[in-house]
Image 1 (cartoon, rainbow, N blue to C red):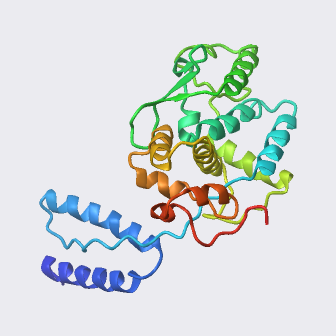
Image 2 (image 1 turned 30 degrees about the vertical axis):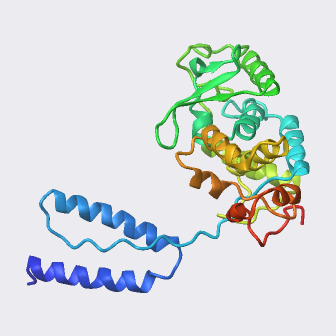
Image 3 (image 1 turned 120 degrees about the vertical axis):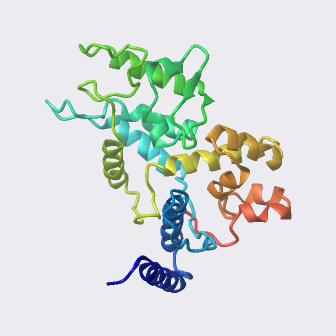
Length: 288
């Protein structure tokens, strides 16, 4: 029977072998090694001595965010506004979806952030929303466009007409289904895939999009384009965009914002060569 030291050596051998084979593959091995390292490091701290594989170099990401065109956005807004819930379907989120999709785009929110908003977080008089459920648990305040304020005001008025209790309670979720329960991300994802099909927008598959999160990508690109076209230096625009999106570094914002030369040639011409890393040299128009 193999003793503890023998087990340790065998595990070490197989971990190193697996790590060597997987080294040049996708991000999957990197993520898996990272999780293993955290677990094994914790075990060592708790007195269980074990082998901790060395950290892998993070592979270069080839991911390019999907950015909706103006015509695609128009189709999405038009289609969601004319969708109707089936009779006796109290579980339907359709009443809230037009406001949810527009908030995701106009404020660049993550799905979890939007669905976690409670009544007390919304201040339509000041035109602000306090975001709690952020990725790194850091609160931030977002400003609402006047049009978005009107959309939320109309939604809340319609929602409050339902004969259900606690809808106006400050602690209650802002976005609810017809039965008064909070809208779930699963329901939004399912509706959005159906929405894309009705709009004739092709789904490229997992990690290619488009998906609900593409509305956040589109916000980032459109916001940066709008600021730079108004004369703001890109060095000043990136920190503003980074703060509005809840990023903790400019690097995260640069990863999200990939303006293409063929779509935003005017911005590319006005940007210095030192900013070339923001704009891919090879790209494909999403109108193709």
